[in-house]
Amino acid sequence: MSDTAGTGAVLVVGGGISGLTAALEAAEVGNDVFVIDKNPYFGGRVAQLNQYFPKLCPPTCGLEINFKRVKDNRKVRTYSMTTVKSVSGGPGNYEVTLETAPRYVNSNCTACGDCAEACTTEIDDAFNFGMNKTKAVYLPHEMAHPRRYVLDKNACSGEELDAIKAACIYDAVDLDMQAETFTLNVGSVVWATGWDPYDANKMDNLKFGSSQAIITNMMMERMAAPNGPTGGKILRPGDDKEPESIAFVQCAGSRDENHLEYCSYICCMATFKQMTYVRERYPEAKIYVFYIDLRTPGKYEHFREKLMGDENAEFIKGKVADIIADDDGGVTVVAENAVTGAKVQQKVDLCVLATGMQPALGDQGKALGVNMDGNGFVVSDADKGQIAAGCAKSASDVYTSAQSSTAAALKAIQIGR
Image 1 (tube, rainbow, N blue to C red):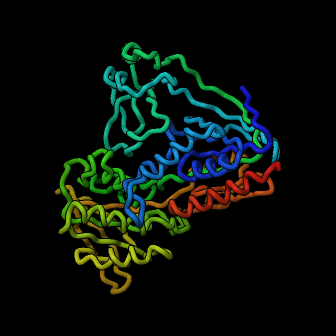
Image 2: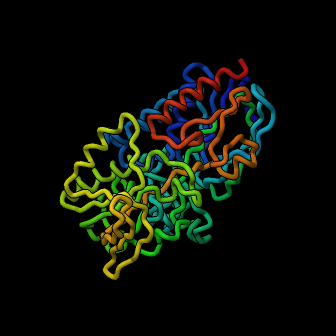
Image 3: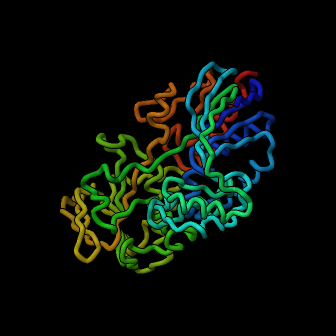
């Protein structure tokens, strides 16, 4: 299969907030745009957030508007569960080979849920970072675009697959669906591949996995979300205890030559934001923030000042050396106060690791010949029609990502003209 849309066509790799922004900006001035994402849904990491900072509004508003714009714009074509296999050619005349993985659910799907009712197998819910289970045939999340179920075929027995297929009166379950390879001819490529949370298991001293009281900041984000695994309640995984004390560990993997050598930019703001989640639910809970430096650039200083004035919050300047699991289900955070020199051993009910932001393209980008820096961020080469946007370019917040995506679209549409 081949799809040619002319020399001004743009391929956007990544369908998160950055990719959607770049795609819509390019399409709304008349360019044909193709948007792909490796996930079975669009929206990226933003779809997993409970709230943006500093306004603390839900991400649904921004995403819903963009999804509607995509649906209404015939210049935009979207492909979920799709990845880039090769890129050849040059600026104004690229040939990109793509592969779409089988979803085993076709476009007849109305998201009625009858297939899930017939399914008995449960799998870890990846959208909620494995904090709960979902059926093996599932809607990725309540706001998923496209609003279509996806089937984990390998998780089910043959008998169960037959039952799932029989339950669909729309003939949407296609157990014979195969991976599809196709090519696009485009003038430029925008890399908006986003970011992944740094793997907390790689930091031995933070003991992630040794206690269910140790979670990551993205797990906290899902927990606080009304559509998350706990319905918006912040509870300690495992025993569902309402925490009376919470520690936030900053720079979990960032600014560390053994992990991510750069500052991940958003982590301090994310912690301040998550302090508001705690306060909404537990006004008297004790909060302890262990940090190297607190960085809230520019317009976020007022937000920071407000949270640092919290009488039940203590800020300890010092890098965490160890986290010890306690018999009662809590943990003890061990650090040295860099100001006083005193050793701190703080017992808490829940510990949140502010894990860093790692560019998601990784080794795949190297294999495709994408220009990348030593940290794995994409380096734009506008003359060649290869442009980075959002967190594929650098660690950034949603507002900055949208700005860089608009700039990327402007550069992309100039190629081939």
